[in-house]
Length: 462
Image 1 (tube, helix red, strand yellow):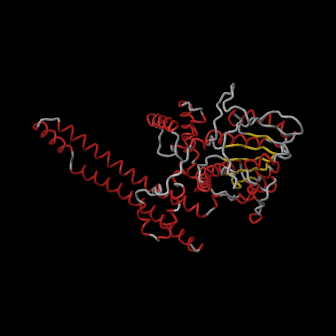
Image 2 (tube, rainbow, N blue to C red; image 1 turned 30 degrees about the horizontal axis):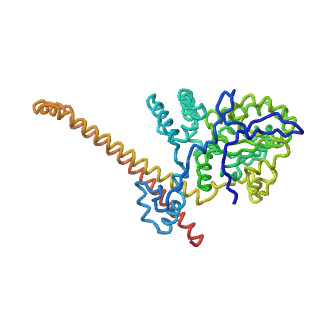
């Protein structure tokens, strides 16, 4: 089985010579003098994955998951298998580089001091992407990150996966062929667009620019929250970026109409500002003379780091694609042997590990477990803070004389009326009921997941 050793290759677009093949300097230095921005290695290299010993307990086990033990042994045994070869948590989270972790801790502290830690979207992965985007300049990264949070709130990003329904999906696919299809040799998801077959006039009749952009955001969220984790489980290594292919056969200046420019600029703005460092490399294939003229205009909108990830090829592109993508994951229209005939074509299939029911169940169970763990952790922190407050009061009282202490206690008792005590108890009761309800919901969901997993195991005859 082919297992590539992932090394960084700085892909630089050059003028090239001959019919239409632009060559890439694969031996150029990682840090080229004269660039405005550093060219970082693939983002996956920021996680140094380790192989835990078999006798170590799986990192899936967290407080609150004990209720799982009440379910069938077959399910429990199948979940234990996750920890035998490699911890699921290590695959999804990765072992962080100590140097990067210190930088991110400092960056998180800066955000906390200035009131920008909202409790969401401040995980290690997200903060690292914004730091890399600004070459680890804390001030610039902070401004970009704050704008990202503001955009998410104003655009309602968190609600899009649940509330937005793109009913025109099938019609849009016909006039703008695009989609995810398989993984590259490293395990990253492959995204493909057939720009040369796009009919922008039909696209704006099938949908609006605003709805298509919202659909694009929903796909980006799906990639971050489902495709990357699923690919990580399948590849048994952390996956955090995509390999993309743009087929530009027949594309020229005439294709860059006003609606096309509007769509291009809006998507470029969103991807660059709010989903940075998620592209590993981009292959532009079937680039003819018409596209080369258009490319001169388009590249002005791209920064040096993005340009360094792009490889522009003419019609002799197959050998370059096969270096990083197995032929079975390459559609037939790009020289591969996959047709996805059961789905009406490769770009309709959304083929990939994220379609595997078992992996989907694992991710759902992990999400539920994390929710339970976070609820219990937050409750523990609150209890510790309350205990700390009581201890501080006791230590302060100990420094007083007995007489002063008595007066101090009388003053405190007088200040706390019975009504205040009742209100405090009522608030505590409401908070406790909310936590209990959240735990109950999470446990019910866990039970449903485990029951479905048991049915799948029985169906397989395990």
